[in-house]
Length: 262
Ligand code: 6PG
Image (tube, rainbow, N blue to C red; front, top):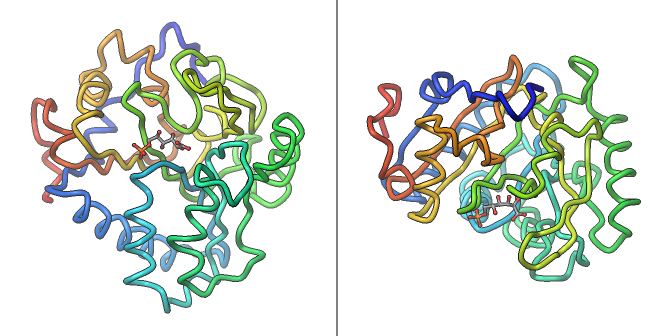
């Protein structure tokens, strides 16, 4: 992991895998299709997928539930979390709780395939035990567990996972998971760290809404300010980076990526 000071996102790679969609619906439909295609073509019989919380993934989960509920591919998919709010699963804030409601309750997926972060536990303890579980179950590359795919969102402040601009050190942590604190609510989170995320085979950002347009353009243009945005530091070593964005979020991107036909 390059030191934060001289980090320069490899934005050219970003440009190769940028996809701009007219609406969040179109984005969710394409992402759902792309996910199932990646799972189908995966040559191992387990696909380790880490999902984020927040509003954007919800549309994807609802699309997966409506279009692929009877797929047998769910047997292959093991769900992990990029981050979790340290609250009980029944709390409306729970990322697991929301995925359970919008997706898992609507598809046939073995319970053993769902590896939730236990929000009801002590955050420090849970960060340690989740790291151990990941290292035990997910094969390694470069000495780190390597998820097949990590789906990330991005906040209006450029945070991703639960790595916030005031906690950039989590990008360079040698732990797989760490405890983070939400900057305004002080809510405790358990999050994958930058190195764990950047060791994935594929990372795909799902970014929608006007509120994301400024940080997205900072990252796209690769400005000095981008250095202070956690999302700008996500660039999987040797893996693939994709950005699925909608038009409002992409409004300041100077040029359309030739590869995006949406
Ligand atoms: C979380 C997420 C977080 C999210 C961003 C974007 O637990 O909140 O992991 O990183 O992806 O805050 O959230 P929206 O998709 O709701 O804009």
